[in-house]
Amino acid sequence: MEQLNRIEAPLCELLGIRYPIIMAPMFLVSNVEMIIEGINAGITGAIPALNYRSTEELRTAIRFIKSKVSGPFGINLIVSKSNFLYKEQLKVCCEEKISFIITSLGSPEETINEAHKVGVKVFCDVTDVKYAKKVEQLGADAVIAVNKEAGGHAGGFSYKELIPDLVKSVKIPVISAGGVGTGQGIKEMLKTGASGLSMGSLFIATTESNVSQEYKQACVDFGAKDIVMTTKLSGTPCSVIKTPYVEKIGTSQSWLEKILSKSKRLKKWFKAFTFYRGMKNLENAAFSATYKTVWVAGPSIEYVKEIRSVKTIVEQLISEYEQAN
Image 1 (tube, rainbow, N blue to C red):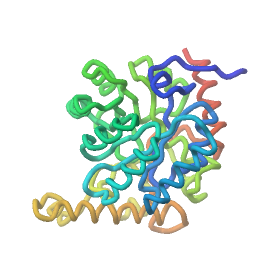
Image 2: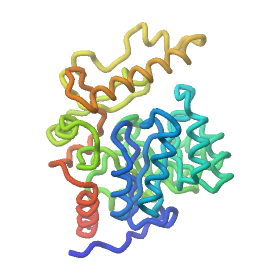
Image 3: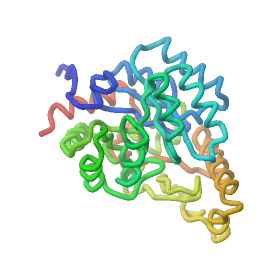
Image 4: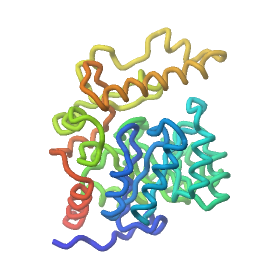
């Protein structure tokens, strides 16, 4: 069966892509090869700036993607005070004039102002109507509606609650993030009013990903019932696979961690330390086999049955979309 030439959706119009899918930015997982293959397959994608140790490495990655493909792609910026490289990363994104920036975990005001000066679009992660209205007033080009089935930092509402509420409350495009792993799911989400989708966990177990074989295989072997939320990684609820190590250490902060995270004098530094420590733990687990295994993923790994290429996954999603009611 021939693939659809295009799916009619606002995200396709906004970015000039064939299919309304952003391969979600995933810490330590997303890389240039995945983005290039995604663009060649008719979608787009984004990489977390924190996947690079320096801003020069980030700049090199952006230029490499541009040398291989002409389609749009983005960079995800953590805009909270826990990201000490934020301002430098923003400067690189603006200087290189990437297609879009996705903001997370903080106020996007400065990012929107600086990005718009050079024609870079800004999509903001939101989990509720109140914040969505706020970023719309600041000038955001779209919101990414992070629901409670998202991988990584998840929201508190189901897509059935969140998407209709956001569509009624803001005039900018609403991109749904979380829980979708099939073409049928894509069609349902668009019918709900979403302008497009951000999909991540489905792409962890790909041949282009650089994470360990154990991490990829875990996405094949585990399912939706094996996903739990933890606040131990960054202080913010984050979805991970319930490995024996995660069960052992628990998923809630200790009484001391909770006190420090609320202290007016210490909370900035404690949150930064928690964030850094959590990211190092993830890095150790992502690239090597270790008994301290913490793998970030969302419930949509339920649909991962084997390790495949990015292209194969996109082709299957579009084939399923065509056949869906």
